[in-house]
Length: 321
Image (cartoon, rainbow, N blue to C red; front, side):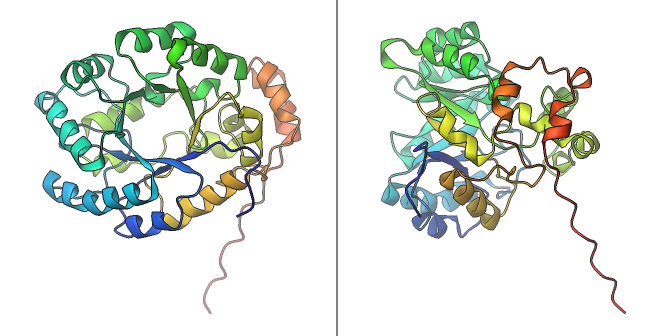
């Protein structure tokens, strides 16, 4: 692969595929970390659970992943990104400590539950902690709560400010002398300021893992106005504009195949394409300046509707004769 035009490393999703440890050996270039969920027995993580039902079986499956990440120098990021208020909550520090023994002292834990983060800091003082985008950190004050109250090393900023570089810079500036890492979620295809967000979180948090596989509740709106995604999603060619502002760029995909993850990794490392990696639209290069300054009242504007190119849907397969 040619040298990257931006140099921002990626965070890749672990999707429970048994081939993952072997796959990462050939795809570690440009990757800073691999994020994976805590077992569903301890808490949900805002995505459908696809791993083993037994926590010990999950731990055994992760041993080969841990060995592979150690060999290629890629950090593990354990995700606990929904609040946990079940009896399992009291067992989370012990489970996290066991995962740190497996993945090593560089393992990072990402949370949105502020009281749980404080509990983990008290139980495991040297544990590196990060803030999930589910915590919706979009302002300097929100960042200060986490820096002062928990001592986090990084924040995955709210997706709503992904296209507001000045707001990201204000969050980044809250790190003090030690600095504060900033991460962005690049491409999850959720609508900005989604009106079904609370329902979606409740589905993941309150239902069993099979029920939690429900489809997006706003897919019709996304199809009707796909350019709305550009208020938060970043196409690969935009990454070069975030150099010095973003430390790690996170690719969505815990429910996707290795082939899909590999394709998105290549696109974002190359940093050239103006097409959304899921094919929703092709963004014009001048859109960043427009989106950065706009008031998000699309009904009074219409610029994106006219400027973005929407690829034609694939032709239906011919019926068998």
